[in-house]
Image 1 (tube, one colour):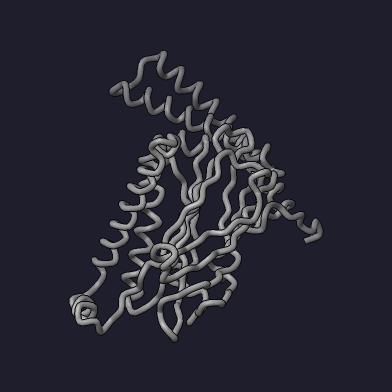
Image 2: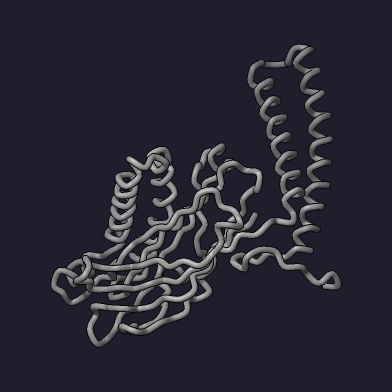
Length: 309
């Protein structure tokens, strides 16, 4: 199953940067929580734009109240893959809208990297609280505070003494966060698909200083190659189990292993050859299926390829 998120359009209802307008840019990360991630060392997987410009790609320069702008393709699409038989299929979107001013590129790039690293880490620490309605709001506040602190520290670490002096003297204006928001989906399925919007208000109603709205769409579709992908995973796990057992046998004996241990090692070597052959066949089958069902990230699922291509 594919879940593709499209960030479509940013609308400016109010902005506080005067006649020059606002220079908004987005930081977004899509967090995946499912049976596979929970069973691994990384309970929360992160998907984010990898384009080099993603740290500060202005949606539209000089945006004023009433303006709208299409989200640049470099940051507009995020996609994840779920096993349809997985009992856990959850998504969390975390997005921050910032306004470009005078902060250096290196400092904002460091902040962006900290944001991408902190989001899955901090969410992973609070998974149980996020599932408890009585504790969810407090957990979200703690996650937000931790992310903000790590981002702030990363940016601060890249500012030169001259930058800090210029800011203190009000010669330079730092980039600012307009607002940060989140959206979550539990049990992602085709019924989860649809359009939605994210509001980025700065200040408190009715006295908002900034107000932006981001139009989005979530598309969920079946994976036609799920059986082939499951077969690859099955054989990979079998090989990992064999390697683990062989390592256990080898580490538990110094020098020449006893006859019974050697016999088991020989048996494991034979099983390994068979499983590797099965894995190779499964990978070929999956590759053929993927070529036939082309699935560009963010397009909402597979598209049939031209068999003559």
